[in-house]
Length: 315
Image 1: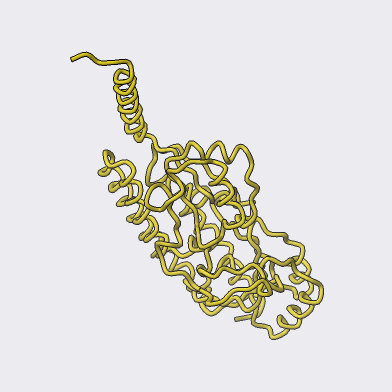
Image 2 (image 1 turned 90 degrees about the vertical axis):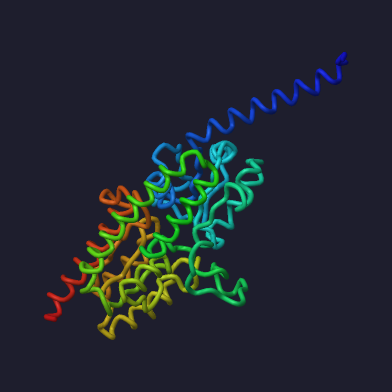
């Protein structure tokens, strides 16, 4: 049978496509992972140590507000997997980044897109949102990484996503999850013991960044430095918070590592309360080098403040 030029060209394209597919499958041995926040970059690195992981933000940046820079677009264009908090935390920049990257692999959760908040129940969901409420999230508070039990659920779901993209290394991913879960559960028992002095303690914090942590520890955030989510503290609002501290039940003023400390300093000085700067994620201070040390650092800062307050007040 004679093969004409068009048939030769068609067969050539099929052969090229097959070869490309082969190399694509082979490349899965080292997944390219783009994480929106450092806590999820750290989690991926733990579950997939051979993956090439890039974090779009640091613990010193506000993950609500990121510029879709060309360097981020180039990184996302090469990604096999995109891991983000979700819950509209990145709504101001991620859709633009996805559009400019033109990488169909990371556009759908059916493929290489993973949202942590979609794997767990979120707190503070809203049935109705309008601009007068400030920068709120209809799908609930997206800072779920500060609940250790939710993080375990997220790790399990993320492992399934990694396996779906790289089935050849299924056993390795499952083994890595088992190791992480074991270490995490041991750490959780330690944290629960360490945090007992924090139960019932009240704080004023900049934003609802530590909503899940405080709920897990039995603490209460009685007020925000922000008059509304996303708005900087105003003088009148700070004065009202100063009045609130006169009730004498506030342990400290809390800000996250990326937040402006000035309002917190103003209030803490006048109310004679400690100002605590908590790392928002891995890398938020020198002690937070991975997820476990992040929790260790936050709990140490909080419990030290509780002990100091108790000693000062004679509790």
